[in-house]
Image: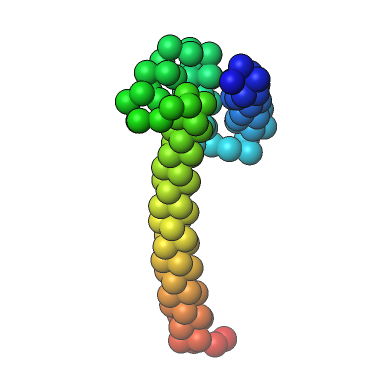
Length: 119
């Protein structure tokens, strides 16, 4: 169990570092990085506090505390992926609407250009 918790501690540290470097290099926006940092911090706290982990396993009805940790991690990341899917869907819809508005503007410009008197 200790080896798994140590690996999870290392992974949470790597996730935090990756997110911070990505924010610094402008690969990820700050408002999206907060979710990842909170998830990594939660993973770090859970992987370092054995008592909290055992209590959580008992509440979930699991006999193995690391299994409870992995279940919580899986659920947490599943929720994050759902959130980002919703954000991507909205961005796709906004992109389609923007392309349609641009096409309408181009049509109006072409109409104005065709209707102007020629010299």
